Amino acid sequence: MNGVKLAIIGGAGLRAPLLAGAAMRRAGQLGLRELWLLDVDERKLEVFGGLAEHVVARSGTGVAVRSTTDADRALDGADYVVTTIRAGGDRSRVLDERIALRHGVLGQETTGAGGFAMAMRSTPVLLEYAERLRRLSPDAWLLNFTNPAGLVAQGLSDAGFARVIGICDSANLAQHAVAEQLALDPGLLRPEVFGLNHLSWTRRVVSTAGGDLLAPLLRDVDFVDGTKQRFFEPGLREQVGMWMNEYLYYWYYAERALAAIQGEERTRGEQVEALNAELLAELTPLIRTDPDAALERYASYDERRHADYMHYADPGGNGRHLGENGDGYAGVALDVIEALATGGTPLHTALNVPNGTAIDGFAADDVVEVSCMVNADGVHPVPIGAIPDQPAALMSAVKRYERLAARAILARSRRLAIDALMAHPLVLSYSRAEGLVEDYLDAHSLRTQGWT
Image 1 (cartoon, rainbow, N blue to C red):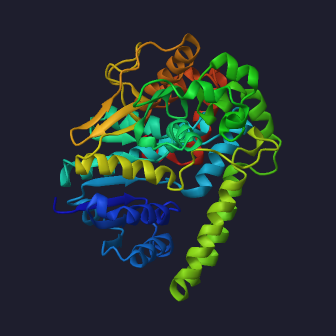
Image 2 (image 1 turned 45 degrees about the vertical axis):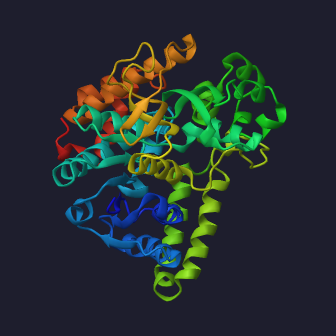
């Protein structure tokens, strides 16, 4: 192996320094040669790209790091590409949430109308990058973190891009929580995850020695209290009988979540926008004069940003969540890259990929969140088979929405966009769907981008 070239599309994003740090901690295993940070925002690239460059320099790995606005330079010869963009910036997220709330529906950026609005902006941008990547580096893998990750991956897959993997660390929390609780290597565990991104369940976590380790832990109050399963009431946990992705809170407690968000003075997007603006103002002079101090300030910000996430789902919570890897989403991506690049021990993890024959009742080209085995030959969904009726019904309804949404975005079709939101279980109304689509088209000036 001559060395891996890794490119980050969205290299001026807040995640870039975290990903750079995680990559440096395993640069040797990956055979990492170059890290490229690509972005269109020159100011943020100087700051957050600069932080990432400082992290790499301090690591002593000898990895070459480059920040650039030139997509061809970043993608030419790339082996792996991570996409983590926010088309339209923080202000667009604020608009997405406020418009949805004005229509009386959830505006969360991955679940609900807000997720659809983000996909309207993000997917066309990523399609352009994917087409460029296919021309310059046709064998490269694209690992997508841009939200809503499952819907974006469906759009890219529908457009003919086969080497795309959707990544989300939430899909793997059960596996890592079990490993942490029982002091086991998570690599020795085999999770059985099925669903869609931010709408998934873990049926079992099996050890290589045999036997399900998850079921008895879900009956252990102390274990549950140390995980995000405490978001869900005992009666629901008993009824479902599986580990639930924390984002299922927005489905199982839909009216409660909406009321809590409507009752807050600022939306999550407004909170993050203010925090990000404050951080950028503080880091701009520091990155030039004292990059170590800039890194300390950045680390403090990251803790502050995550401290109250989904706080309405966890009143009185202790802030502790078993299984939350410090490397988060970056750790999942790097695990996948290592398994693909080195041909070493196969990786068992949950990813967003085409279903194939893994989950009964879903089409081969439905992008699903499912347990996979990853090795040098690629990504292989694990057979799941039949799934319980209630998750199957919800999953089918949301998948229908995702397929319609992907078609709408690829065709830039207002009519299909309305169809998609009418199909969404959290919207289910023509008048709401039409109003949402019209408002999003206007708020983000999408009519000028070919939407008709």
